[in-house]
Length: 287
Image 1 (cartoon, rainbow, N blue to C red):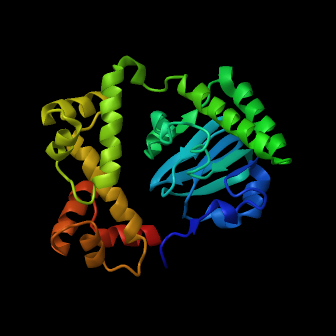
Image 2 (image 1 turned 60 degrees about the horizontal axis):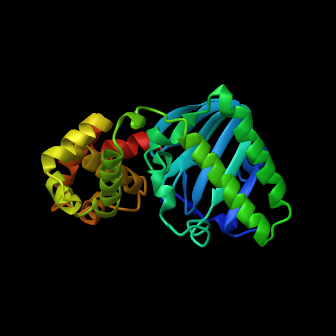
Image 3 (image 1 turned 120 degrees about the vertical axis):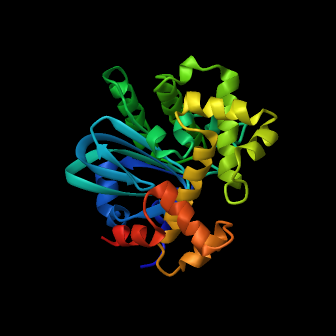
């Protein structure tokens, strides 16, 4: 078995290289390959209006429900195991889709559901917003049939309307925390994403953020329920899992790629944080 296939938006859309928006049922019927574990090189959003089953994102399982929306960023691993018929809407867009439209190219980083953390990216839309979200998707589906520069801008606006509407629901308790704390936490998460292979200590990130390690640790404990060190370790373990499912990669090579001094240290680290050894994880995945 080789590594997860990585699908580009061009391979799933014949009309536009930067965006795809369609009803979900025909989309998944035409692309059955998406039912097995894979990655995307683009942002991927799904809104279910019908169906049930299991959706696995980065090795975490979520129950598929009507009026559930999920957000995925490039590089995440996922697959579905549906039971019966499903329907809804799918929205795919490239990393560059908003860059020529917004003065802030990293604007999407403001939304917690675009952080690449699975448990923060699967949301249930309350009844008060279900009709609104569905109406916006319906309008977008209609616009895609006649793609032109003006329609592309309207699609961008409609997509942003969805993001802002859902962000306004204030899932969780993020509204209870100050804007400064939220900004520091988000910057910490971005730095971890960029440097987890080389920087493993909270003090390293605290220095980059101009805060103390104690402040950073207290912030993570308060807002995420885990320490700063655990957040870093979880990201390392996730990348290890993504690499371990490629059976052509020796574990020693994975240890080296993740900047561990030797294979035995990597094995101890993985078992301590994942509960099983790398070899056991591979066997479980094959099952």
